[in-house]
Length: 261
Image (cartoon, rainbow, N blue to C red; front, side):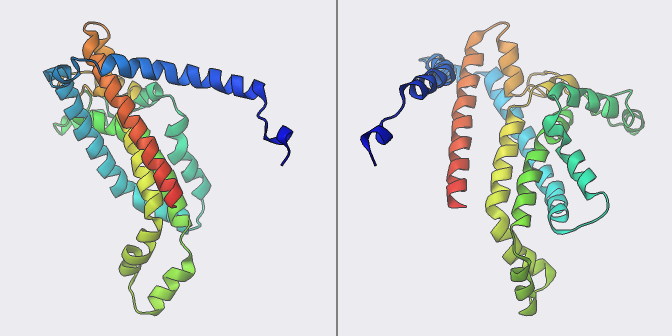
């Protein structure tokens, strides 16, 4: 290799440095302000702890529903061909492209007090809007498609001949799925779970429209940051720093999973 070929062109280097500065500097400033001397007292304050608790509980419930309902759907879409499959895939992916505020309006029109299903539910004594269950539904609608896409890719990567060989050896359908299909698809499923969880923790628009921002009930981390910006900046800085650390951890985990896969 010649010296000229090894020399890096100065213009791309300069432009890359400018882009890196624009992307990293705000994040570093935020971390510097958020991880200050009063980080721990603010982190342990009731508003911050309530937001962390609400986010942990609701995102966990949303993730459980995503796995329970999304795994069979992903397997069906990846392994079976049927009329309307492309349409169904498009509809399930649609929330990824919708603005979260639009998703919140859709939830209100469906499950709100005067919505399509809201009135029958209210007659049954169930009021979903502006409740913790509303947060779970908002997170499910906006985050489940990320798991579905990854799970479809995982199940699609399984060689049917391997499953057929296991069945020839005497394994039943359930045993083949647990011992053959699931372990092969697991890296994809785990990646989807991480992406869905990260998306649910960062959800804002659908949640504030459909669930409101009630401390200790529906105020998640992002809603707490928004609320704190209007009064006390310290909780907003601390929660923002926590989200940055979490986002970095998620990206690092995804990189490790991708390298392993």
